[in-house]
Length: 419
Figure 1: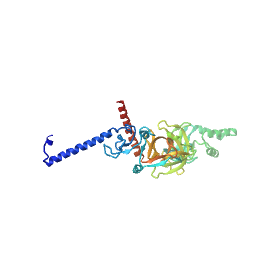
Figure 2: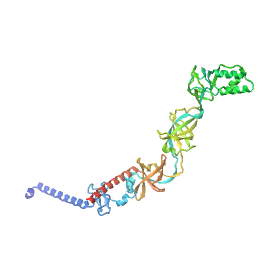
Figure 3: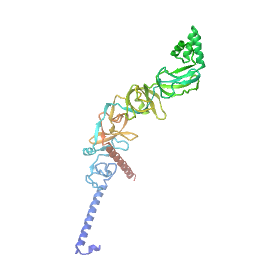
Figure 4: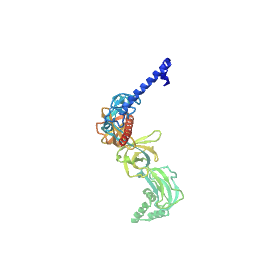
């Protein structure tokens, strides 16, 4: 107050008074402006009068029925639609939004038409090469005796059909040979049949006829070509009838057993084409077909075993190898959208549908079969609609933000009514 009692003889005092006056006037103007609009500030996208007019892009909770600038950040207000339109077509946590052509171009937004397509989804699985069961044989003896000599003494040896594997001394075989040599007529035929049942081959019986004398030991021969994959015979060991001595496998044809996940197994059919690729440096590959689908599901891995048969004359597919198996399942024409149009949250799948005039509406969809580029849509969108394929995450972020702001505003509006 003492300042105003002084005469304005000092220029400095005059400037101080003028500055204080300007500050007071500006404060009154700003206060009036803010007070005049504070009555219009609401949440949920509506003014107190119930009509949505303008809001601030940076502060969506500020809504007014007059154009101008935001009193918080002084950004130009933009028009918005009614809250009913904002919530139209909304899903939990997301609402319909509107993007101007300029903003769509800025975010690089693109869309694609929902259409029917013939999908050829590929099921990929890990497989392993195994011996073809029909080409594996156990070699045993039908009589008791002692192994006198081994002709094949190592695992992995290559054997031919009729090739001797070991020599066995058996008193029972020796007695059967002598009985055959002295028999005649019908007794001769019966004695011959007994030799066959004891495991003596036709060639060995012919040699016995030619020589006319029984042998102390007889050879056990291989019934097929192949590799010795297991050897249990040991020289000098006594064996009982039925004891396994060798396991021989023919590797000219092998099986590939692929483990297909339970959710994909229903799409696998016998006869479907398959590509098998090795894990080696050259990544050798071969084509085949599904030959059998096992009827059970592994309770630990939740997979179904699918069998593929491969030719292996060159021996490049070795039992025990791990391979990649790709099954081409194929399909009829189905309603499909680009894979880039689907937002998979883990619990549900969403798309944003172009509703016209810049409106992008969130939809929850149910997905069927999938390929790398296209996903089948079982429900949620119709043929001919357009869905967002690029800029999807930006659109989804804005939709979630607006839904969150509206939810917060609705809570505050309810509190005002309660009070």
